[in-house]
Length: 290
Image: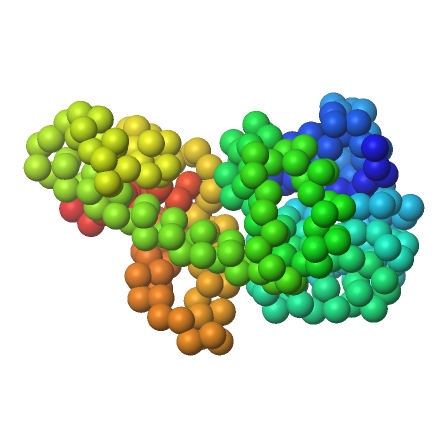
């Protein structure tokens, strides 16, 4: 069992840190809002610290799951950052979805201090985190990954190393690109069914087992038909992720016309007041256009 720090107790990090504690590791958490860290400690029996540096002090592994590039820099760098508290040969595992650029930057800083760095963004949403069923996409040195994988498996159903530093973040970009197109296609299909006077549930029952089937269809069609969008990954977060995808595509020359279009559709959803709705709310935009 390892001494572990976990930085960031949002809807993902809170249960992920809990699974590490329940697996028998000695977990100390840090959260920007201290009351949430106190609540976590009361619930799971671990400890909490007032700064990332203090949480990371003496830890063999430090995990992070925060909001964006700037949030990640803030918990890693500076006098109170985690890197200041970490010893050489310890491992930093980042589950935040961030740009490959900031991953490369922080990996370089970590390695200069003898700290191993694994980028490990996740897929599966809040439900996956709460049920310990996340898919984790990793980049980094093989030896560092091999050390971190047994701990990651406390909350993952699948954990894979895709390559060197940054490969995990690039794979997460592929994941988000695919989701954007799938959700828009599903939204248009269900909207078309409504306009055609079809029973949407009956339609999905027929086509769901065929070539049109997808995780999004199975898990989101009912709430989409019921106009309920409080189930999962928020539009604001998706736009952040798609912005990373589009920026990276500009750098590597990839063409992402559908992704760019769907990003603008999500912008329309934000204008409807749906920034905190889940990503399946693209169908709401189509209904509002009627």
